[in-house]
Length: 456
Image: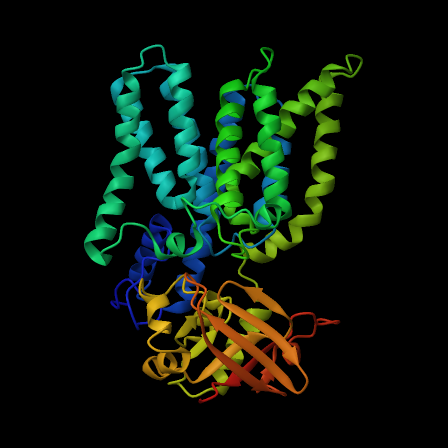
């Protein structure tokens, strides 16, 4: 509380999506910083975001001729709720998608300067809920040029979108001397192409939703598709975002996670609904009630597979990372300071200890340079690092190469933006603790260890 724009207290950062961070900071202020109350407030807020998202998106779909909202809900359960969206900006992003699309539909129905400007403001806030949704904003503005007969109204829509986004970039410039967030500047290679392993960067979910983006545009090109504008804007937004991720993101930056693809998951739900409508039109002998039951069954069966995980995430059930964090809190001295190869947020939250992520995404903007002044050990001394947490299996990322060896583990640490090697850590077996010692899952696949930071 009161430490400013920082996750560790060591230096200021803008490595977060601003609208969600502002909401969490507000909840922290209201709860007085009490951790249990804040966690429950965050989860309650996310439940509210889910409710808003489902309500508005179903309304959007109904307005556009959506026949089967069950398929949209199925897509969201499988593509967002059942994975790592809880605790992140993913649920707020979902709600803002629904509100923005709803506002856009209403503005197109009665296009006036005030309504289009207001819609633009909502779309701008959608971008601030997760910054790479800017591709959907671009698609929405561009397709509005096709849909609006009075092209002068595009100015009002564009002004509305630009106002909150430019305000954020200007504030970043004033506070940090750089407009873009550190996470974007580290991961992005723009304007230079990064063509290695584009499908790997998208991951399975990214490839699936990108393919459904193409399907959406094909469906939108059909004159008998009632949902043409909706499928066109979501399909184009999904394709633009996927293309950027595949072509301008440095390799191995963990872009294959669900909260990257909220636009694509929503588009998938609407695509499934439109495809189901077309398929059911070929079954004229079925009554409307029988068709509804058939679609409901087809939606429920796959959704059941993700419902349990979705519920566990929604109630804040602890997993393996939290178990390790609780061990850190109970077993290490209160002045311990942790460096971690990955997953800093859950470790820091549940342990209450400062956790420094070697990927640099929540570190100060000069983190890459700091690791090179002159090396990793010098940075660790300045930062007073006492322990390190790492996977015990092979792991190759832009910021670290983890290699199991006979009798221990070797971690080659790189400055994340430049890729410059800054130091090598040789860690002995056994570690102070292994996550598999703390959980009852059998077999345990998440071998994650804790070591005392080795001095040079």
